[in-house]
Every structure is written in structure tokens, then in C-alpha cells.
Length: 178
Image (cartoon, rainbow, N blue to C red; front, side, top):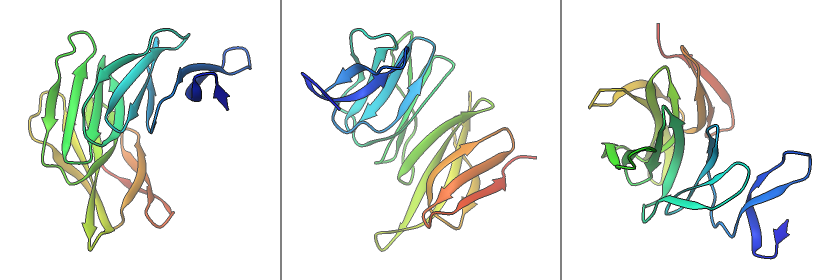
């Protein structure tokens, strides 16, 4: 659907009828929520708008290939395809790089105080396999939680298990703790 300003990318629906929150957004990929805002990534940054509508804020600009987005403990986390994992505390807005040199990081999730992300490993330009990496609060060095024989298309975790969609469209699971 469209608005007078063009294509509407971010919608809300409180009474059953859609409300456009942010029009003209190019390349929206990931959405996360807190109690007040809707956050999303575009190719070169991260933006937010109040859930009930209002002024759009550019939180992060001039980034390269934002590939994953997560929100926990008043921090916004994102990955960049070129190897970096970042954190933006929403109160201070002081950007921190948590990890660099990661292999094509993508999807992010926060589970039991661990920031987790999927790394994609390539062979001759094709997805070969994936690893799931975690960084606990206060840690400086990420650790590999699981090495997978298949490429991760997306994943979710609970306190013990990893569930993912592999590159060959299968839903997989494995125990990662305990």
C-alpha cells in the first residue's frame, strides 16, 4: 500500500486499521520493539519511531550493510556484513564496537544475557556452513557456541537450544548449553 509520501514501510495497527509510521524507507530488513518504539534497520543504518506515531529518529547512520538487529537491557545491537558487531546504549548514545573481524555476521539474538549472532562461512561464493557465536555481558572475546554443517538462514534460541533454518530450507535444532 502507499501513502501520499510514497511506499509505507513501517505500519502499526491499534484498532484493526493500519497506520503508517514511517514512509519512504528504503531497504527495511529487521524490526525490534521496546515498550515505546519500533526500531528497524536499513542498508546504511538504524532508525526508530514511537509506536503511536511521531518523529522518526536516525539512531545510526553511515554504516555498512546492517545485517542483524537486537534489543536488550536498553541497548540496541546490530551486525554489519563486513565483520563488526556494535552496541548503542539508548541512554548515552555512545557507540561501542563489541567484536570485529567476524565472518559475515548476520542474525542477532539476546539469550540469558548473551548476545548471539550467526556467522556465515563461504566456499567458492556459496554458503558452506555456519557458526553461532556468543558474547556474555562483560566479556571481551566472543566464543563459538555451535558449529553447524549448514548455513544459517535465520535462528532463534531459548535458554538451552538453538533452532535454525538452514540454507536448504530445513528447520534444525541442537543443544548449545548443559
